[in-house]
Image (cartoon, rainbow, N blue to C red; front, side, top):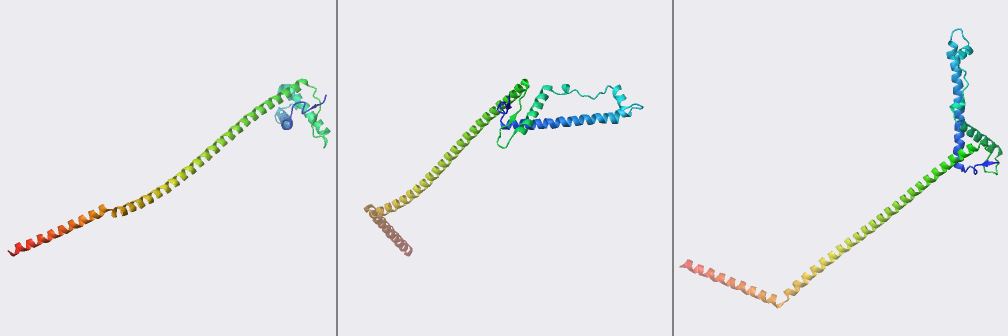
Length: 230
C-alpha cells in the first residue's frame, strides 16, 4: 500500500521541516560516529599502546575494552527505525519524481506503530499551528478594532476642533459688529440729545448764569476800587 504526504496529513511546510530534520539527524549521526571512532583510535594508539611490553590487543583484553557500541542503549531504536524508513522514502521519492508530477510519493511504511507515532506528532503540530493561527487572527482583529477606534477619536477630535475654531471666529466677528453698532448708537444718541429743547434750554440757562457771575465780579471789583480811594 503506497503512502504519500497526504496520507500522513503532511503539508509542504511540515514535509520540508521533516526533511531538514532528517538531514540534520543524519549529519549528526555521521559526525558522532566519526568522533567516536576517532576517540577510540586515539585511546588505543595514544594511551593503551604506552603500556610497557604489551600490544594494543593485549591491553584491550586486559581492560575489557571491546569497542563495540550498543546503539540500542544509546538511542531510541524505534525512533531510529522511523527515521531510517523516512530517509528511505525520501530516497525513493527523489528517484520516482518527474517534472510533470509535483506530488511527493513515498514508499510504504511497514512499521504501523511508527506511522501512528508520526501521525500523532503531525496532528499535534497541526493543532498547535491552528491554535497559533486563531490567536494571531484574534490579535489582528483586536489591532484592527483599536486602529478604527483611534481613527474615529482622531476624526471626532478634529471635527470638534474645527467647530470650536469656527465658533470662536464667528463670536469675534459678532463682537466687532456689536462694538461698531454701539459706537454708532452713541454718536446718534449724542446728536439727538444736542438737538433737543432740553439741551438748548440748559445751554441758555448756563450762559445766563455765566453772564450773571461775570457782572457780579465786575461790580465787586468796582466796589473794591472805591474803598481804596477813600
